[in-house]
Length: 269
Image (tube, rainbow, N blue to C red; front, side):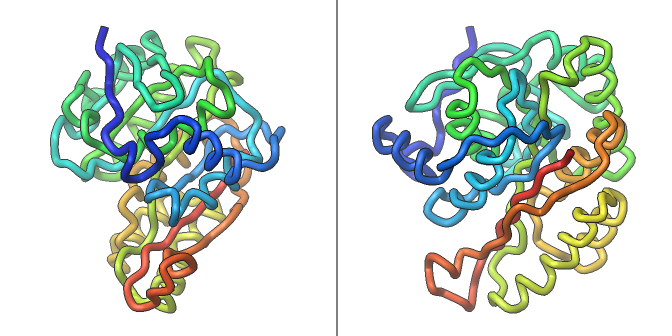
């Protein structure tokens, strides 16, 4: 069995299980019951963005299956890399991959490939797992990492995900999580300004508008393609609205207002 070991435990979040549980409980003080089809969560170090991610996970009803879509920071692997078997370890437990769903998505999406290399060192999905484990330690995951694909490919992947969920009768059990940070290394004022342009398109449930806005304004939102894909897929599954949960920048912790990173949390219902 393929076991994906933690790559950023001790860096992005605590490697000590007791410390990690304590921190997750601090970020998730409540148990939510919103039956979300999708969500947007950041993936920076918990000290900076954990409170934003926790605000999202605190609001949503636990699901059995989490389809995780994140950006490729390492350059390894295929354009659309899907890990189809094995499990992911984190300091507090493990989460198995939902094999039938992962394979069904690959069968439906020409650009999607069975791939491990993109996932070994990538942090954007790993940092979601302690929150997911807290919600449901028996949950299964489908890890998907994207390189710079075009809008048509985002739509094709979204169609593949939504049709696979429908055919396997898994829609009600599943949620699609887009992992992204917002602007990188701008001043706090400018980051908030440009991030608001992207957030407006997200709030309006406009994936094509988000895609075009990020490119036209050169917004350094690393996971905009996973977010575009998630928005398309949840629309196809019948979602009606996006609720913005929280926005913050790293300056709120670092007090460095010259070079910040933005973080957005949102829920799709």
